[in-house]
Length: 113
Length: 110
Picture 1 (spheres, rainbow over the protein chains, first blue to last red):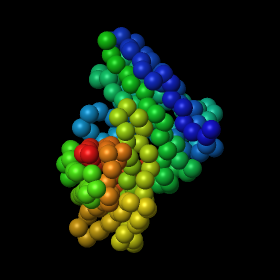
Picture 2: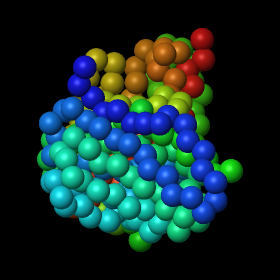
Picture 3: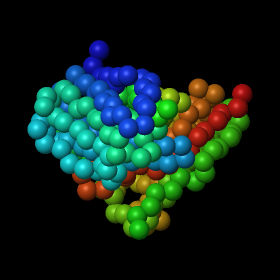
Picture 4: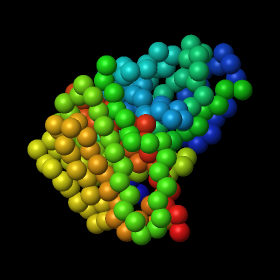
């Protein structure tokens, strides 16, 4: 089935550790995105990528890093510099990065312990 | 500053009634607007898109209106069912990316 796969669904991180969230899509979409969702707030854009080997910072990129070495994959690393990383993280993709409909994965819960 | 508001954090209605959700924005001129449904612990799912030159869009029991003068979109679910209970998000196209509202949690009571 076509779609966006995020893993793991639940992840616990100790303070000071980096963690990487995986995102894979088989929709042949050019653009991919990472959003963060906190209770009572809308989705906030962390990073986005319009094409392989290129990505741009979103509104809240500090403390995060990404790579786009393959069209299908857009992993997100939450670094120790991110002071409040506990949140629900959503990966998404669209055909092109020009405002097309965004398709989301099922999300990953990250908790700092 | 730019801002998106959705009428209330939570809305309860009786089964069979029409649910109306509001999305208001300030300091934007979006080319179009989308509505998504999100169930607890899951990713949002696209429902409808409406462009700035369209007044109304329908899909089955769903209807969206877009008033660029009022800077407002209304999302209606007619003949609501308990299965419609979810959080509904509006999203505005700003430049190349979408900006999302905080969502309204709809509960349809049997």
